[in-house]
Image (cartoon, rainbow, N blue to C red; front, side):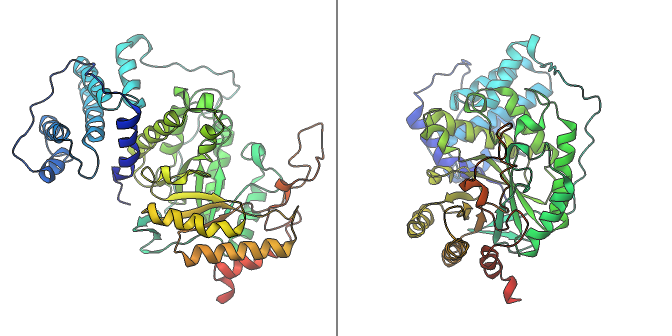
Length: 461
């Protein structure tokens, strides 16, 4: 996979130009001398050439910034990233004062940069440079290192996903175990259930499962201290997916309250822990930063500019850790604003089928990268099995005819009313959420599986 920062261009330009006032240089550093004679193309190459000295790279990028030029990405963004790298290199050499100045300079180009601000805070407050986390936990064992499989990574090629140089159309399903869905996943799930259900999913021709991670389950407290039992269960689930030739799209921040998500540093440490642990695992197709992240600001829980800056900075952070996996953002309505940030665009559609074609046309006109229908489905609580099958089949045809990267159906299984209730009110009343599945609670296939088998080509073999 070729990772470029081009995906950050348009959104970061918008944020830097339209959302942030003109900034002074808080470090009071005299800018490096500009290089007046080179062309923009040459300066772009020099500024991003890691074999050049820091001074030469910064001189080239400063000249571009003075010219208000853009190569593959804005000079301001490049300068932020380069000063951040420079500061970290200076820290490694114990040049602390110079590192502080470098981080201040980075922030003068991108004032909301979480990574530079975190390093600056640590260096300017040495008494809290190393955070000591304590947890009220009875765990007394360390988490063993994760042993990655030898599965190859899915990559982007143009507007398609590829695996082993062949097209990889996503035939996916949102997965929770039938008997332990939602908040019970990872904490209560029986691995024998997962093994059986993954085999059933793969037998229908599906090749991808989208799963949701809740940091509060994975970590022992508000800190990057792993809950060993839960991580070991997740390790096993990834292994079972690989055994069944399933790739996983892993949503990283399920059920995290916006008041924590956008403001608590410990969450960033937790995300880094997850991504570092699985950075070499090819059975993982992609990291999805936030499911329906646009609902946070559309419901007034956070300002849109703050949310989008957070997403941009987190993606920068994760790309520095993991250069193997694709990154996406599963927005619900404002999908196009994610396009500059991600490797492939993920949109969801649960409305009237007649509007799907227009939604796809709008995305294809502007996204300029692979497009995945990352969430769609119809509940047989309110419609018949026949109608569910027909609507899904029409959706699959629309995705294929428009050359999208694939689709993900919500959900694999119906959920018993005893599995989705909150004690003592169990079993709960029947509801839409219980009956989106392709298989019913007894694992008997609904008619929708016919549409799956046809769309995946299984019945054509």
